[in-house]
Amino acid sequence: MKTQVVIVGAGPAGLLLGQLLHRAGIDSLLLEQRSGDYVLGRIRAGVLEQGTVDVLEHAGVAARLRAEGLAHDGVEIGFRGFRHRIPLKELTGKQVTVYGQTEVTRDLMEARAATGAPTVYEAENVTLHDIGGSPRVTYRHRGENHEVACDFIAGCDGFHGVSRRSVPADTITTFERQYPFGWLGVLADFAPLWDELIYAASDRGFALASMRSQTRVRCYIQCPIEDTVDRWTEEEFWAEFGRRIGPDIAARLPRVPALEMSIAPLRSFVAEPLRFGKLFLAGDAAHIVPPTGAKGLNLAVSDVFYLYEALRGFFREKTTSGLDGYSARCLRRIWRAERFSWSMTRLLHSFPGDRFDERMQRAEIEYLLDSPSAQAALAENYVGLPL
Ligand code: APR
Ligand code: PHB
Figure 1 (cartoon, rainbow, N blue to C red):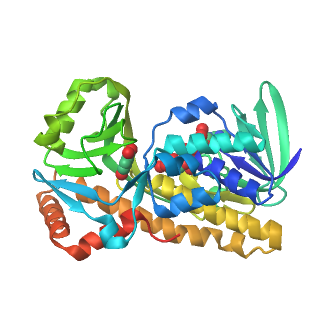
Figure 2: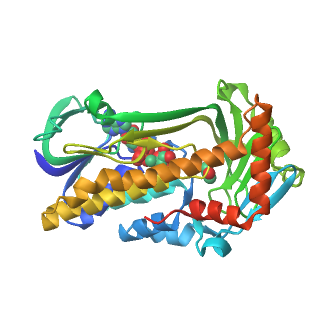
Figure 3: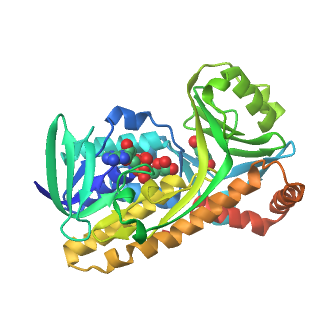
């Protein structure tokens, strides 16, 4: 078998790339090691930049997003018992859209199924061959071995995927920062008691009040990196969340069972470059941001959009300039999002230990809350830098 592009990984990055390529008349085969249900079961962030919404529109998958997405004009920062609103729209002219990554993925899966383009779920032992020459991908599915020749491979297989691991070690450089805490998150069905997202820097640690819809909330608290979900009951979660987010909300939190409860570690990671011969990395395969600021999905979407433009240029106009410039174009945006996610993480979480650092952090938050230009800089990054 032969196709133009083999896409490894059917998360949002791989699915979106497949959809954009399909609309440009470029064939792809999508290989995913898990089942579709497993992919939809992963709970991730849910804040879309306007540029992300525009790309989803361009891909023809924004109908439900347009109908159900919640437009937010601001976010709140909680600090020392008070909440301060950052008016995103007033400061930047732009909004963000609250719409879960699971829903984006579901819309993309349905679009792919409707096009009839081939997708193999539960593809085992996906292996990349000859990425510097005539690339091929082999895999095993339902007990049979398969081999596909292609012009290009898109590595959209996330942080733990096979693509980044398939390049010669001396051709890749990685940059990493681990944080000494994780986020314990709960998904629950009740109407949000907050109009906009609240990022709270309390003395007890960070908390985030988010939402998925008018009837579903997503809340997080900073927890020690060694914590496991079984060390927390739902009651303990809500009690701690309430103490960090503020007494007005704590007093009104309903007692409803959690739909999901999980812990995610926080990490910053970048691999350079994003191109190795005929292999192009995109999304979490190439970079991870800590979730503070919700840049992960938005960054995956901008990589994919650049890759789509580059591949379209190659197949339609026979120009390689997009492919040649892909890595540098992505990395410019990636490092800015890394910087923002890292600075939001540093600003809002408790890093116990160094008293000087604690005072610096407090001064930085106070400066932000007093300074319109510092707020404008936060807002500019939060709504998304231009694609
Ligand atoms: N073979 C085939 N598929 C694989 C392999 C493999 N060896 N390894 C991983 N995969 C699949 C995973 O099962 C997953 O479905 O690749 C997919 C990668 O999807 P994501 O991890 O969601 O990554 P991406 O599509 O880049 O989406 C980025 O996810 O983590 C968030 O913050 C991030 O929101 C951002 C988004
Ligand atoms: C979420 O709703 O899951 C969410 C929102 C904003 C973030 C991170 C996660 O910064």
